[in-house]
Length: 213
Image (tube, rainbow, N blue to C red):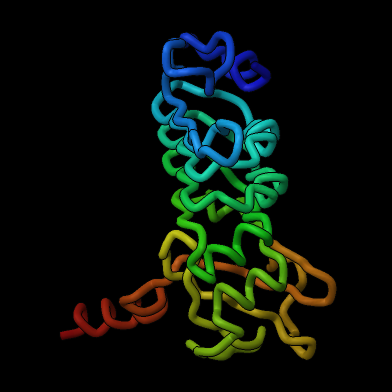
């Protein structure tokens, strides 16, 4: 009822959502009816429903939830950390919204170990990462793309498969701190979308050569 009121859901949500089969089934919800346990909500699909505002923390009260689809809405803000408490959740679709911030660490770990399928890219220009998230994104800073006065640049992948370049500032860098958008303790870093065809400088140099020829 809290979720219905928050998003002004106009559905036949009345009574017990997992009541006996003779009761009208709640639209967009699926329940489990195991013999050894009481009925529980396991699936919620509110995609393309014109939802506004942030993601309600009340979803975390659905402890048996396995599938949550909030895609193609107008949701804003960050992913609430309480969703990490949904230990049965295997599919979380937040794609095609206006979300930002970082993915809760508990969810990110499950994405990395394959127990959670998370769909939904966050706006990279306003997203912040913790150092632990950067380690996961870069597979513990495994592949170096380059090095400059600021430090090393590492290859990485976000949870939705987007390839990124992670610029990690070294302590000996002479570059100003204001260049960096995110800070975690003593570590400063920038996360860019990966340019598979080289840097802007490379493209400018190639263009100069073509013009000369």
